[in-house]
Length: 216
Image 1 (cartoon, helix red, strand yellow):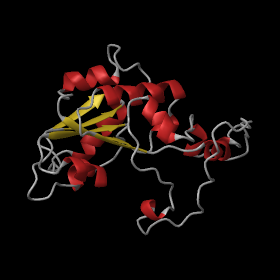
Image 2 (spheres, one colour):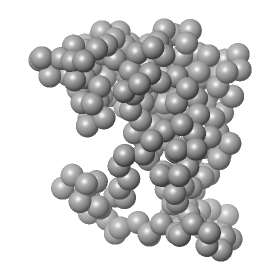
Image 3 (cartoon, helix red, strand yellow):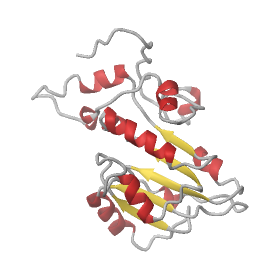
């Protein structure tokens, strides 16, 4: 919501893109302040099966965040500029790179292989006008190791975490390398990232850059 507020400041047209949108419903729940215009459009990118099921559930619900909604059926594992890639599909759906964009990549990047993460971050940066913003969640190496340590044990019940595929211990550097300036980095449970609702144990701390790779 804070990221959306930075774009819906009344200083010009803007748009929203949710990559790996899943069943997120913010386009139908959130609205700009009365003094600010709605986003020109909200684009939700995900695989066909997810977006088709979502549209069936939300059919007839009023869109509150934007003037227009576009379901962009694409697999992020396809290189962005390939035919059928997510960037190509976004352009065809009407995304305008000359307008500010609020990119939402929550609960996404750590399910993608490192090469796909790099493709996504570089692509979003290149499709962003000045004043655009990106919100993304990542997991550090220790969290990835803990989540996947029992993934190959047959008797252990698998969770969604067993599908995690990448980590990021230095978002300030790694995001900068792909074209993004990092302004805020916080872990769940930190004062700026609990919203009064965090009840779990804090994630393991980030590992220092240059340390030994102990990934099993």
